[in-house]
Image 1 (tube, one colour):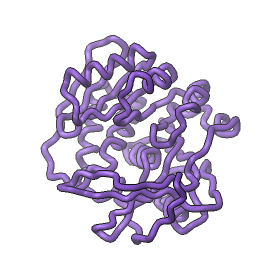
Image 2 (cartoon, rainbow, N blue to C red; image 1 turned 60 degrees about the vertical axis):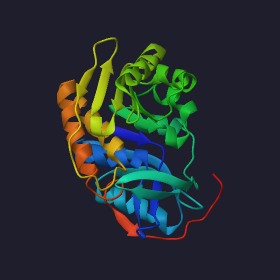
Image 3 (tube, rainbow, N blue to C red; image 1 turned 90 degrees about the vertical axis):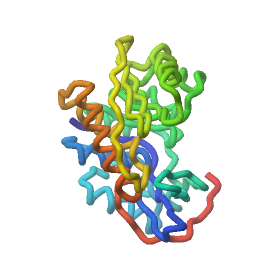
Image 4 (cartoon, rainbow, N blue to C red; image 1 turned 135 degrees about the vertical axis):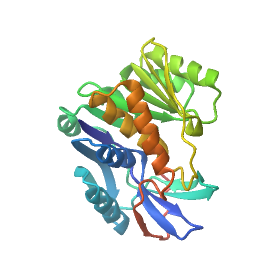
Length: 275
């Protein structure tokens, strides 16, 4: 299975703890897909010319993620300040730095031939999803972007749509899933945190798996782990239930480690560029 991830990278700054970690939705998905057994995981994005850009590339290389599609642009690498309370993370302040970019013909040629390309709301590349979907099936992480208007713009071009539903009742998760399916998404995955995960394919009945009881250290990256591991399982020929069970176990393991995927780097004072 070959997966391309297209979009964000970031340095997660844990100010209170005095440390930071390489992360970002698309970086995390690439890393966890490779850990889950993907033959190839390639990350396409933009880092800065600062030391943090070097840190992102080094962390990806250490995880055997292909970085040949990464552009180094003059300026600062993206960052995000994280507050952690009883293991649950919240985002305090962030800056996109040089990380924002648009898909071009060269990138489309490079991702052609991959089994799936993963993108996310955090990369601000909504207008590019339709172009990527013309050459490769797209996985898109909507996170908590649940408005029907937002979903309707992207879902028609998406093969795997993922939503965060940890704060939603089961009935709300179902309504959200059918909003995406009726808008054109082929499959929908809803992560529910400690309550597990749900998956819909077309108009078939959903498949549900429970969460695992764990002592949470840090929830950052858990949803990305769920997405990556589920996709790898599906392309490996596992059933939906088998893929979900495996993905839930991997996500629980992520909750027991610090940072998106456990690659700490020294804390630094970030530069605000107002992106």
